[in-house]
Structure formats: C-alpha cells, structure tokens
Length: 317
Image 1 (cartoon, rainbow, N blue to C red):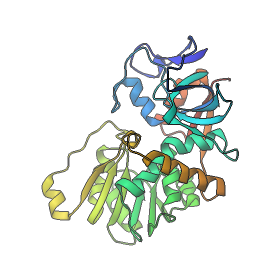
Image 2: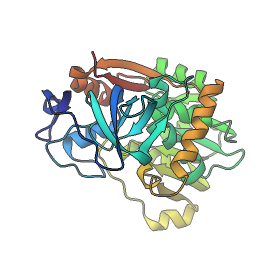
Image 3: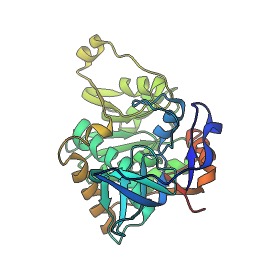
Image 4: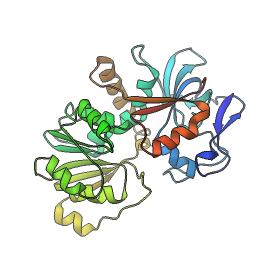
C-alpha cells in the first residue's frame, strides 16, 4: 500500500511516500480502507518528536481516518494513534465510530479530534458558566472554528475570537463570534478587554503559548480561567503562584486523549457533535484536501497559518 513514512525526525522533508505492507489487525483491532486522513497540528510536533506523546521510528504519522471497515463495509471514523497517512490503517475497536449517512468524511474528521477538543474546552476544562465571556484563539482553525460556534449554544455570554487575517476574522464572525481581533501579542491584553466591552474576560482557550499566553492571562477577570490545549510556538510559560492568588485566576491544561480512558467522555462529546452537525446547527469548516504525496506541503501550510479549518489527505490521489 502507499503510505507516508518517517525514518527520522526533522523537517517536512522526512515525510516520504513509500510502498509498505498492508497492516494486519490484531485481536480487538479493525482494518480500515482509508478514504480521507485528517491532519492535526500535533502531527507537526510528532514529526520533530516534540509532542506530549513521544514517537518511535519508523513511523507512519496520522492519528485519525475516515473510511470503510474491511470486515463489515460500514463507513466509520476512527482514532488510529499512528498510521493514518496511508491507504489502509488499523484502529482499536473502541476507537472506531460509525458515521451517519448524512455526514461526509471531512465533517466527521473535523469533529473527532478538533470538535471533541472544543466540546471539552467548554464542558470539562473551561467549565464555562452561563453568561461568561470566552476568548477563542485561532478561531478560523480546526478547533477554533468549532469552538466559535459552540459558544452561544453552550451558554457563553460573549464570544471573542482572534484570527491572523481580516478574512479569517470575518469567518469567525460568520461562525458566531461576537467580535474578532488580531492575535498579535503586542497590545493583545488591551484588545481582549476592549472586545469584552471594557471588562476583563472569564475564559480563554489558548494553544499558542509564549507571548500570546502571557497577554491572554493578563486579560483574565477574577476567577477567570485560561485553558492551555497546545503550545504551537514551542515556547513554554511559567505562572507565579502569587499571581494566581492575587487575581483568583486558574491555569488549566487539556489533553484530549485523557478522555479516552474515562467511560463515556469521548463518545458523549462525539455523539453530541454529530447530532448538531446533522441538524445543521454546527458547520464543519473543511479546508484543502491534499494528495497523499503532498503531506509535507500540507504540514508546511498548516504551520505557516496559510490554511482554514480542517485539512485532509486523500490516499487515492
């Protein structure tokens, strides 16, 4: 089968098209013919072995696929861990979810990682209460585009988006944000407070790290929370405990895969998202679909913020 394989860690050039044997499912696993593979920002960290979960080589990257079960012919979306950038992938049975006929592959892949992340940012880690203000960084991206839409249905009083271009900020407004601002760290604290009608904000969903994290933290109201679910800049932050005490603020981390081992946490979120998407309440922003051999270019575009929404690979192209 055709697959993207890494035999070393490094830049995009380590993502090489290869002919590999078809994977054989072990007991409790499912073999899936992949129709679309999803890309995540985490894939770029896996490529450099800087992700939360360390990788081993050789490696076929890609943690999620949509396709058809070889044993039953059922359309599914699945968490595969690794191996997604390929024509065939195996997934543990508990990580395979049937697809409603009304949902296309792109929508399903937008929901399985980015969607469930956005869902748990509100419900589990951010614990957003009715009427609270929420800042959604990178609101035109995979997680952000869904989080911007979930804000008001989940009770947020004011949804403040950030995005790196006017076009992306307009998209965030179309998706349901009340206001959209530039994420440049210089002056960001003041822009967030101004966007919240002059008041400090209650909750921030943050995935950049570095200066954006610091500026967002400073914009928090008493009892405000900043939820860190990524470190795209690879710049870690430190928050003094004295600052937490003086301002009654909280810093919360979120890693989606901790939900998988807890009964119902993942399935509940995905089921809710699928229902909202099927009813038209939630729109998946699906960006470009790249041929499998262009996986390296897809990751370059993702890291350089050239993209919008969910990116896909087509193993047949």
